[in-house]
Image 1 (cartoon, rainbow, N blue to C red):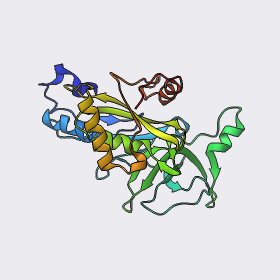
Image 2: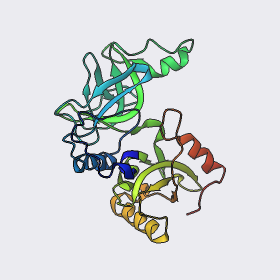
Image 3: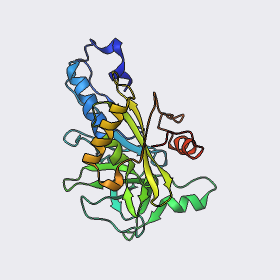
Image 4: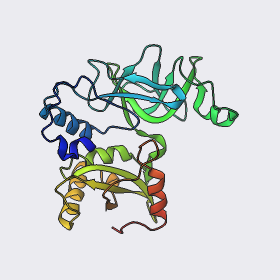
Length: 265
């Protein structure tokens, strides 16, 4: 995002760039496409590549090796690692193409959390195949050709009027709008629907948070999302709060929302 909005890089030649790797947070498909276009218009002959992992597996466990770098994908398992997608309630594997919880087995998976057996048991679980699998808390699927796709966080799922609403899908649609640079979505309480989606939006350069832009973004969402997934509230910001690791701080946004520090729809 910083590279794309930095005026000092407008005329920089990136033709000698060999690799650029994204990790640490989810790279949405619209952002991935925008950044690849930025690379190509600056002379680079590469696309951004992605890795996937977590502290509990000593960092990366999959990578978008050549031939697997599809938009939205996190590639294929690195040597020695196995992935499966399972139903988080039953631990049963789901078919190819079906969404579920991403689970990892391999030599780098942790032995457990120090002096915390309860939390260890919540994430390290033995499946019917006899293996111990790390339950990542992430949602995704494996395509029939074996490429893994990340779709969102299990804990971020919003239940609105009985429907499962996935913030990452809403964010993907929001970021397809030309005015939106970055977005994030949280669930906020609703009197009848239990929860509804609220979108925080950082606008791209050259756009302001006028009534017309908000109307255009809402209409875009109504066109591309199911009615129960359309954000109930929209709030424009200059930037989004981040954690010390640089990830969007969803908890801070949720706390701000609870305290009333948000615009009413």
